[in-house]
Image (tube, rainbow, N blue to C red; front, side):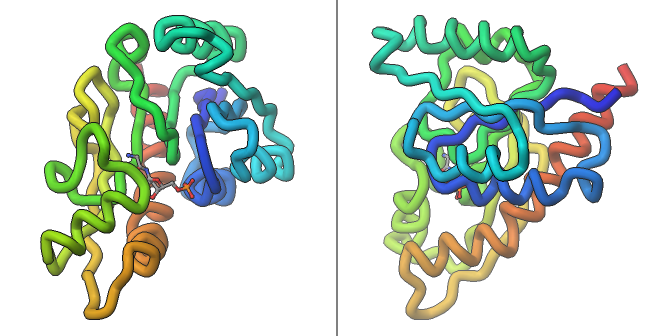
Length: 199
Ligand code: GAR
């Protein structure tokens, strides 16, 4: 039996796509059985539908509080028998109330080499803008376990990516995705799912 994976998304979903495309290839031990978005307009939902994966939308403002939002997410994940959760461009922070329920079972992909340019407020293009503003010559991506500290959980995999003269946040984001995120995330997902199957 494959490990049941839920992917949580908010936007374009290119990392979700990389996971979908890796199924049956790099990703052997796990299967994406649910995609959840906190944004009804996320293109990631279309990607899931095209791949025949069940989707759900949970809106924080309809839940009324962070706690109610997290309780709703937990109920959904339990209903679907989810064993591993992958945050793939999920642009909201989950509190300890949620993370403590899934120790070593939530993965996140972050578009920098943690501990640089990470933590609250560092997401999406802002991360690349911060790297360019600082003037670093190398950045990259990190896949890590999620705990109660934003971007503070144990690192699973990292890959460095060169910054080139003339880079904008957009060109850098694209290079980091192509050369690091889309490769690392499926590999890390496989590693975690394969490990869980040995327990
Ligand atoms: C990715 O670059 C991901 O690493 C980043 O948002 C982008 C989502 O793109 N995540 C964060 O910044 C989390 N702190 P995608 O929707 O195309 O996968």
